[in-house]
View 1: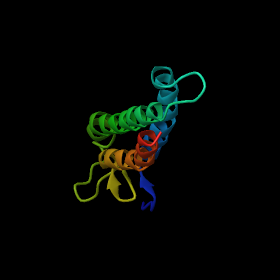
View 2 (view 1 turned 30 degrees about the vertical axis):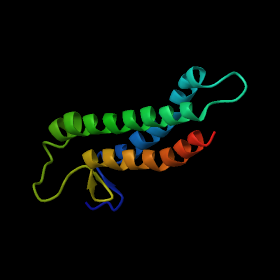
View 3 (view 1 turned 90 degrees about the vertical axis):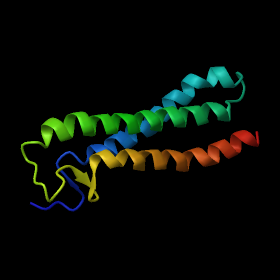
View 4 (view 1 turned 45 degrees about the vertical axis):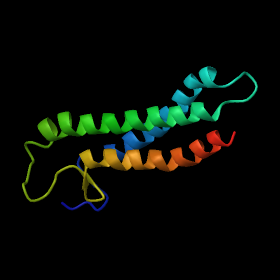
Length: 117
């Protein structure tokens, strides 16, 4: 059976990307008292929140793909010609780099705003 968008556990790559995005908001709220004052939030809290959130999302995706999906979930269904768990024809483990790239896209304008604050 051919699925265009994802195969087997590939959809979890998007789930980890969304989790990293949501974690970045949580971490920026955690870091805010350390970098900002009570009146205006600091841009550096958002920078550190983005690094922590997307970094943890990418790390969780990599560990889940390598330790769980490739070892146990895809092993019985492994066909050497076709990777089993993919999203947009990329293996799930390589979506960690895509998650980090998305984090960098969000990080660059925040670092620029923090430096000009």
